[in-house]
Image 1 (cartoon, helix red, strand yellow):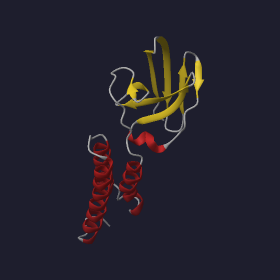
Image 2 (cartoon, rainbow, N blue to C red):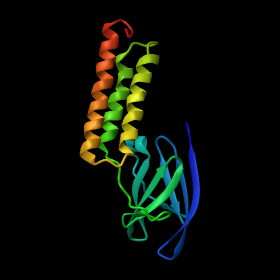
Image 3 (tube, rainbow, N blue to C red):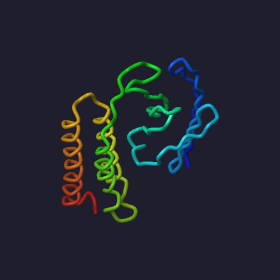
Length: 162
């Protein structure tokens, strides 16, 4: 099982914090200045890790994208000062619907459908990282999912998928 270990320090509101994060598929641990923090385990990790935790009475978020951790406080990233924009959670549902194509195929016939489903999921994840409004992101996620499943049924009808 793949394991991710990250260590970093940040200065937040004039105080230095040492962070340690260890994540596996089913377990995430965050330690702040030697104190373990409670994190929820969720499927949102598909889009990049983004979980809320308590930092000395302040609501904070641990955000990990592309292996780079950062903390969000008061709607801003600590390291860059940029505004935090949460990714829409509905995208996880559509990414999973694309990946569900794998479960509609008999054993041994997963390569082409797997590529199709994974391609759709990657496209949906790409849409969630864009700056467009959430309503447009939803429209794109629905459209991508429909196109992927339509392609699956079309390719099966012409005999490419069994």
